[in-house]
Image (spheres, one colour):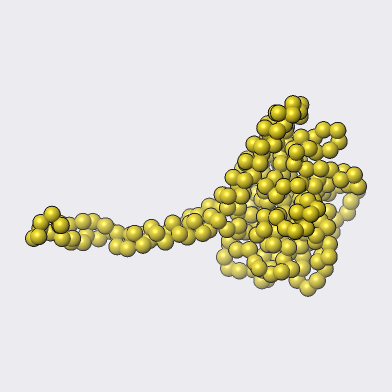
Length: 269
């Protein structure tokens, strides 16, 4: 389990990447009057509309970089295989699960989210150093854990029949689609502000905020796989970033949204 978590951290970046924004047209020679003299004409080789193409590419790149998006991983993709394995081994022994994985979506986070996550990690490491905590993981990486946020999904990303032709999809605005709502609001919702972000080491656990909407037409179970800065572990509880509820030792309640970086969404059929 630990080796797979390391693979997720090192090899599966959770950021956005823009490729093939625009294709430049071929070069052509144009004649421009030289302002230094009234009668001389000089030739310049340039791309027609190059400034417009460049400006459009920059505009599109900036817009896409600021938006959280979802990209589906196909069957046979190494990243998908690792995530499926992580989901399987996270289920406690003796627990039977009849849920079948339907789709695995990569979360393409904007650079702002990645920067906030890393800044929070540095803050946790600094606080651990000042408090003289001896937990080595906390001093090295803020005690990063791979945890699950159990919720539901109801938009087109949940169904292969309703899927779009694009391999990358924007988040929806449907009020009942909790996956897109959580990702769009970056876990910063009224419920999580009052109760914290409850994550679990068990992929079968459903968060409280999703229990009321777990049933309904077109609604499917989903799990958001998250890299989480848990902070220092001391005296049976997590300090700095999160706490462990007494009623469920497998769960961790994170008190700051910057401590959670969503990386994948697993949809169950």
